[in-house]
Length: 265
Image (cartoon, rainbow, N blue to C red; front, side, top):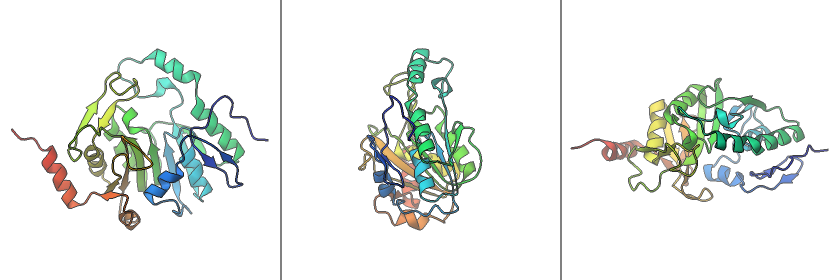
């Protein structure tokens, strides 16, 4: 008998190999379609799902043949990115409802999964992975470039992340980022509001050879969200170049970013 997921509702729609469906508010299969990776061959691939929450990307990769999968996340509110002071009222409220981890454990048991679950942040993740997912994380970080630098060290293929983007900035090609010190972006756990040009520049500066991105608010993401892809070499370039839903950062794009970003008096 399936383990009870308790009072926690599923945020992420998931379908098991036996046809069992657990309905959720988000169906990430539409995201894999957007990225053009729905039929990606995970055979012999090592996959990292960082900030895994309910583990959708980890279980999806495992169900699609990945050889080894890690699902990593911080476990408690006090483990989030904080400055000199922590908001303990917010932390305690979060810790009282650790729904994502309960659902992950529910799926792990029911799928007889071999996914390796770790308590780990993006800053100290280690190992070598062909595919890395990090969805809904970057804007929760005080040091996103440091995180992307570490992902480059771990990545042997593709790094894909989804995040909030500051779409109110009309100059998206300018590599700019806002810092939300308190509740400027809703809650105290939200720190970063970068432009797409900034996220792309961070990927490029970290060492990723090829960089792709979706349009802001592209379906099914909705505003103000975007997905970014960094490739370490040419192996998967053709896969993403062929996708009309993705924008490629070519030489002309980088020249535009330079013009929008450079300081002038």
